[in-house]
Image (cartoon, rainbow, N blue to C red):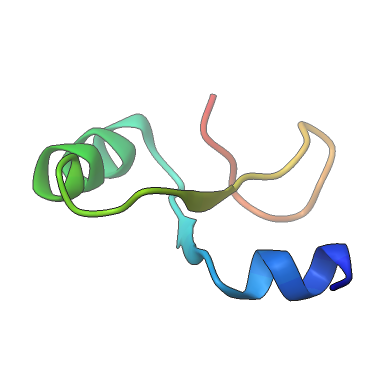
Amino acid sequence: MTSSDRLERFERVEVTTRDDWRAWLSAHHGQADSVWVVTYKVGASQPRVP
């Protein structure tokens, strides 16, 4: 099994603000064993959680 195969089984959570992240955690804190949190570097053209 490759590393990308292992990542495919995780829910992908992409948040752009701290409030989004807190809301997701509040709604899902008891549901998922693992998730893949997607965020971007400071210089990226994508929004990021500061």
